[in-house]
Length: 123
Image (cartoon, rainbow, N blue to C red; front, side, top):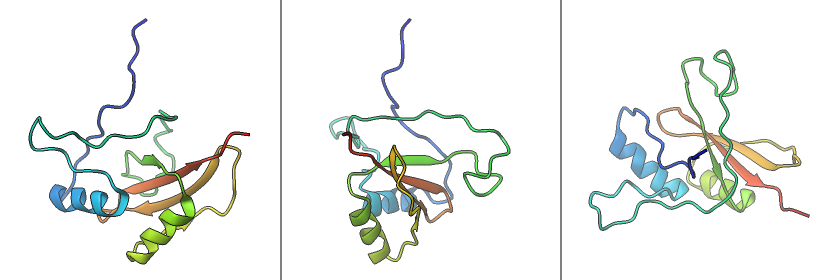
């Protein structure tokens, strides 16, 4: 069976796409979509990716009308939290350390939830 090899993009509606793209680039390092074919798009590091449909009545994403949530892998939770808080961004950090790592939640300027995940170090 032929399989997909990864996520090639995440597309969603925004009230102000340019401002939101700038926010993701400034605070999370996600490059904006190139405007030509000579510029490379944002490239993520290889690693685990969870593809998980949730029940339509989950409250995990926050608002009931919220249909999606992105989870970004990060290398250093403490450094990322400090960086975001220094920029005035509220971070909800889960104080528990799970077998698969550490988690925190932020919201972009349009209220979309973003889960940050520092995977557990093997061994």
